[in-house]
Image 1 (tube, rainbow, N blue to C red):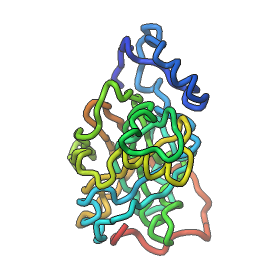
Image 2: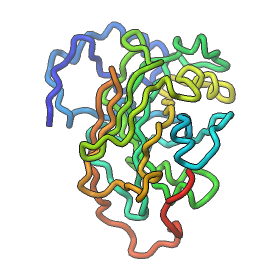
Image 3: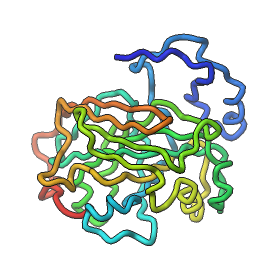
Image 4: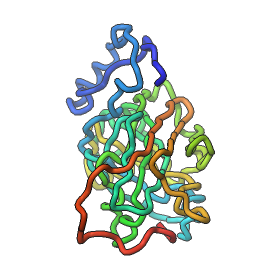
Length: 277
């Protein structure tokens, strides 16, 4: 795998994101990882144990259209657990209990200062940085009920990284996002196409809960996902899925099969996902 040479501006945030604002402020004083080389296999998830992951769904009009839905006038939202987080170059396990494992390249926001009732025009002050994520989804589990929780929370199904880039380094209002599967472009969009902007997402989620340092917001995926294609394109063992966001880098996952599961299980969706959602 490729080797990353430590950048003078690179700092290890592991453990700091859950330690509050004072710890977040101290990041500015860190200069480097002692100049040592960093291999891809060394990198943990950009936020290894986020307390909460707030997610927007159907946040690009092209994605709404391809799902057969109307473009929403209210943010579609759901949550992920920290158990679903995965390192940016780790193997992505396709759950044995799904027949429709899909990809969703997205921009991630890492909250720094946090707070409640944060207006969009002041939200930048609450951002620790930005990162890349893949909101990989078991579509049949997502569609089996009216809530999305099961399909979005298989263990280790959301690679996130490779770094957290601070907002003074990058303006994310109009940057390019690309997802490739085995080298073929599947998703290609700009963040300016989002229905709810990055800063508006902070305003929305802080309307009903106090955002805390280390919280992550997944801002939604553009059109081109696998289930909306004819025929559907699912992630299969041996595939390589990559998500690249301009200025933030690339995450890369090799898809592997789950090694062992119970031979019989009651809770299995009745069909694969081929329609809306």
